[in-house]
Image 1 (cartoon, helix red, strand yellow):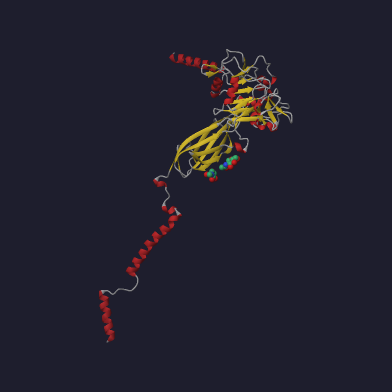
Image 2: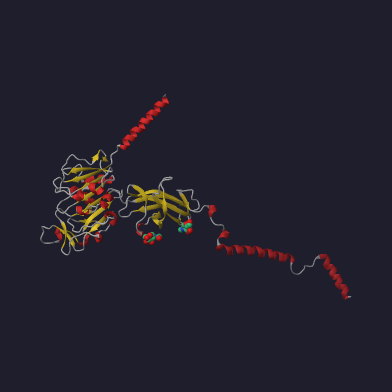
Length: 439
Ligand SMILES: *[C@@H]1O[C@H](CO)[C@@H](O)[C@H](O)[C@H]1NC(C)=O
Ligand SMILES: *[C@@H]1O[C@H](CO)[C@@H](O)[C@H](O)[C@H]1NC(C)=O
């Protein structure tokens, strides 16, 4: 009876948990827009994402002062999109606030900001972008060119991995300056002859131009150390599916599935904490990429995307490229969902605390960092080579042998070889014989 009650309780618990889990909301997307501006067609995210049951998109007006980004400590949304607005300040201070946005980003939230030729972004969104090293032009500034039509083609795309093939025959929008922060990624650059200024200013002077020539960027992105993403585009025309997927972490997402290191002659003993100097070591790592809703083996796109291992103590003693061994599975009998990379090397002739460091940061891909600290010890007393294994010692060993042999020969010679020494009885006899001969 008792047992039965327990089983029933357990069953109820499991089914409640299951119901709770399956009723968890889909990924929440927040879209901020200005109701006084009609939503541009390109900004229709339903169309861009072919929204199925995966995303729950909430549209909030910039004028909605009750809207919030956080519920207690947690952010309600995974991704936030800022569409152009006419006003520089927004009433929705629960969302449009530099500090709230930074906190949202630090917690892993992704932000997409869209600007237009005639519109502005709320000041706090702009300040937030400035923190990431993206400086959009002020309201009313547009990209112009006196030599040719302002357009976007393959030659303008700096980072095709993020924005794909952007094609805009006639670009109407604004531009931004991008700082040389290593985490800020220019996506689309302007033509050499382009500049950004307000069409109202008749004279083009340095103080009234925001960008000149190739310092002008029409789209830029930023990925933080926590792999959260920010993207900014100067016009809805540049908003494409590739970019939205990238910001929403559907593209360019990597996962380190495992890391292993072992001595080449003891493959069974992995992840040991101690090695000896001059050991042959094998290091392997498995990396997956998120593609179309599942993990697949990651294949570096170019030669420069090779994974590298550093074996370092303050300085890297070894920095080696990893070689792809082939696809593998992260679960037993599961599908092949990762690529196994490996490298083997000899530990340096230096003892101390070393780190196997895998630090993979490539533009457009989430960052992979892994550090394993191991001890490298010197040879134990009984691990040194015996003297006769060292060719240099052969001369000394030979001298040693020669001395023994020479000494032995000398003694033998001294004792038994050469002129016989006269001894008592025979000497007397010989003397007698000689006497007899003389007679
Ligand atoms: C690693 O790969 C890069 C890029 O292909 C190459 O430049 C570098 O020389 C390689 N390093 C080693 C140690 O082979
Ligand atoms: C790596 O291993 C292969 C075969 O297992 C061997 O031929 C090669 O010399 C090793 N390389 C190093 C640097 O130890």
